[in-house]
Image 1 (spheres, rainbow, N blue to C red):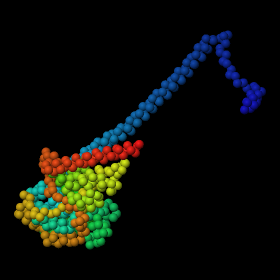
Image 2 (cartoon, rainbow, N blue to C red):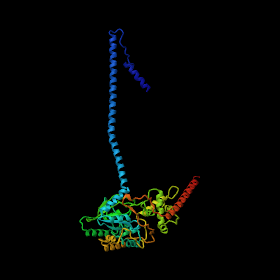
Image 3 (tube, rainbow, N blue to C red):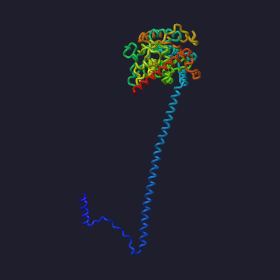
Image 4 (cartoon, one colour):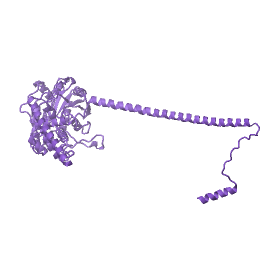
Length: 498
């Protein structure tokens, strides 16, 4: 590189090329008009500098205008987004508020009253595992007092979870007051939005083991009863049948089984149905779905826990509900049903149940809260078989007189109803007495038809002093066991650390 540069310099020197910049000699002193020439040169220099300054200012203003325009465009784009965000936030808040309003007791009571007023026939759906406990005297009395000569029909649902002899006794007991129909709703109905919507429910004469949940029993009998009653009416309007009852008794499942498609939403959680919904099952019969009856806070805690009507979120509430349920059940049958060793109290049962199912936390500690939630889900859902015995002597409520009972029986084809119940019980597969848990029913459950009916009593105010003392003693035992369990876990962790 150095040699190359030396050659370039040598050739440039030969050609006469010089790198030096010639210095401006300026205006000679002897030149005429020297002062004028210098003045003109200075003016030209000032003009060039002014021109440069003007161009610089113009570029500066142009940049400022460009930034201002960009800010305006950005604000125009941001404002609709912000407005939309505010609208979305307001919409979400409004939607949340609407959802909260639909879950309020006042809204549920008003919807239930709408269903009663709009219906010609009221079907009160009862869980066959505790028929008396799922009857609401306030609801039945309201139906009898409404104008229009409304009829009330009792439907025993979930009969496949109760021993057959027990179902027969309850039908004999309840039909002394109202017509009673045995029913088993289908729990595996296809959604009408899918292509398989044309597939129908398995008929009762088909093999039940192939799809036990898809089978429906009692549908034909109920359809014939409603169609016959609608034909005997002196009215051309469709027969409106309101389906009412406490949560999780199977109101929506009954309507879906009658329609043979999923017309109403169903689920294991309470309170899925928020408002009334009409479903046409035939030309002359229309079913109306309704929200569940709101249980009165004045009911004893045992009644609310047995119906799973008031179980709040939180460990203490769930454990309290399980504790109340176990007190009403036959301990030996619970042990056989869940295949756990003998236990002294509810906390020990949940600990054994959690270890049996593998519900463990860090360190191998039994997750009793999750076990309690699973036990309550079994009790509320359509898996656990339990039953209560029908009373030997049934005492009628005060609002049911002989005249009212005769009016409720009038207009129905009772012979067809009796034959339909016999056919249903013959076809459905029921558990035996040994595999079903027996418990003590607490009688009818009070419900709310108006928000003004809510008393100031706390939940469980009707509990006796003896029950309260027993519950307090058991809670103390459970807490001591829990404290001992925590202490042993801490000791185990300390040993592992050492």
